[in-house]
Length: 254
Ligand code: CTP
Ligand code: MG
Image (tube, rainbow, N blue to C red; front, side, top):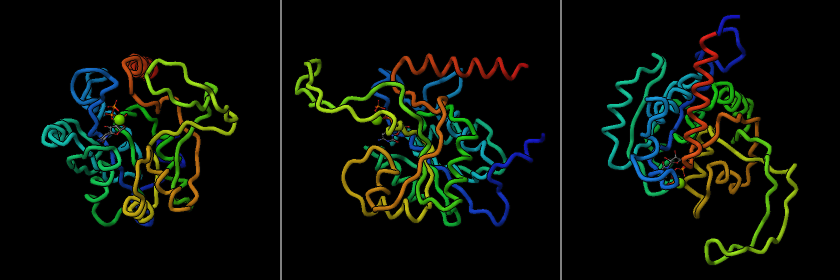
């Protein structure tokens, strides 16, 4: 079966065009000292380049907007120039802000007209498979204003009364039913006008973009996520990412 016969979102003239905004402006404090997280290498290639390629791998994505560390936009532009993307994919680089939310907003502000679907994807999730990206786009095309890839939880989750001092015992106040919970990933997909409205009207801290759309009173839907879409957050996650890349190289060899 050729790659073109697979039921993935096409980039045909009648299809809504999709842009991906990649917030990559964080420092990566939890990863420990070093370069900004998005610029750290995985298997010799900066994490951000893996993330950009993961978005560009979808035939539907025609533009990638990278939100760079505030003082690193020129360096990021040079990096992207040096790593070839598919011919159908354009890119833009803008400097980011102090919070993820601010960085995403700056990326949205830079979006040219003509892209009706927007993905927001963490640079810190460099290994998301293209099938997950396409599934998110497909659900937006099917009419959902906001879509999140999500996985069931492996761990039971407890709600606690947070201790004032780190390391102190914390009283458990509730155990939410695990079967009803999902861990959400990126790319999250949106009808562009809805996401822009959410970023213009919702104030206060939110940890994901879909959460802002929920605050508008709209329905967000979850589609199956993927274990390889995990976020590189702590040093152990780098070990896992390298192992995933090694496994891919091995499988490609057959
Ligand atoms: N991000 C961003 N601008 C910020 C903060 C975060 O664009 N001011 C981006 C990060 O670059 C990352 C994504 O948001 O791709 C998810 O954030 P997270 O994993 O928390 O990354 P960091 O904030 O860099 O890590 P840490 O919280 O450990 O410092
Ligand atoms: Mg952070």
